[in-house]
Length: 447
Image 1 (cartoon, one colour):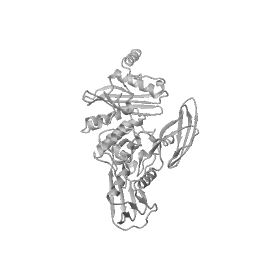
Image 2 (cartoon, one colour; image 1 turned 90 degrees about the vertical axis):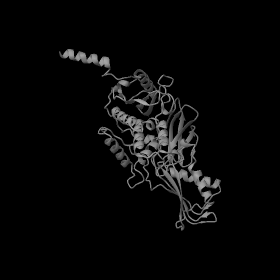
Image 3 (cartoon, helix red, strand yellow; image 1 turned 45 degrees about the horizontal axis):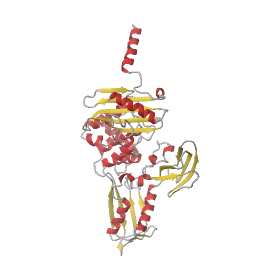
Image 4 (cartoon, helix red, strand yellow; image 1 turned 180 degrees about the horizontal axis):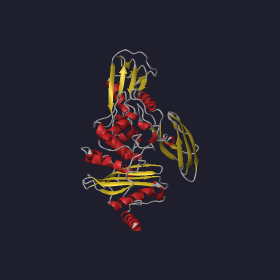
């Protein structure tokens, strides 16, 4: 009898694939694969595998961040950076300082919103409209009212030199990063960062970068198969870049600057507020570009500018929100908003629960619209490109060394979500393109 039962179990596994991985790739036997696909209207589970296993989510963590922010923040501009003048204005001269008061806006001066009026040019226009052509003091950067988080202690040091590892501060500027092209053996000038270029020619391109938090020394090393290498790197003190840009612009526009802070100034305060893009505009860039800085800034924004505006408080509020929605978070580990922390953990089923909740909520259309379409947009432009599913799935991707994940929705002909889709691969040893191909073929078999 026991042999018969065992034989029946083996037959069921062969028929339904209960014991086998749903897809394979080179080295997949040593990887952890999690899948949860369900029909939103009925709750019917279409496919599941290791659905309750806590896995590294990488950037699909942003799906939770986006949902949390939409539920907890108004749809308007979440950040207002202020410029303030204290001092009398006489004959076009401010007898005092210009203060830039940060609000933690991660989008200030961002290249991702080129259609917006630049913050620095808005400051010049404001001063000109006040009839000001000279400031006797200096430009004072005040980011302390919105304390800096900097680089997360849960991120890897090897990530923090690159743009995707840029820290979050009271004053952020220009995506807290800069673009630089390097050639082996050439010196590089990066303004606020001292660059040590140790690149050498090689058979393949394998470039690494190191910069400690707060350090102005950036070391680039490794091998380069081409003549040059271009990438973006983080800056240690973004407000210093903004200061230099304002000083340079003031000189170009004929606004004098004393350059030394005025310690005592009399007169009234005059101020100007610069609003960030609205909530969903920021979230859409965050989801399409997988922008870590925007994710960290938007998640902390749920705390507001209070005495408790720490990142730990933001995570606690996020967990309280989803616990109140009925989700069991006992097996999750959320330590940032971007998913860059490799110690984050979440199961496919839990993430699908967030997706299902949002699809059934009044925020459904706004939330789903944040996701890029596979085969067409953002970081999923190569997934399922030129297949019948191109444009029929809206998915967020997440990747880091050994990790590739996708989460989002299957859409109907009207762009409405019909299924939640979560696929998570951890511990892979092959290239991401091979895993992506396997996942694409699997999705074609399911849908």
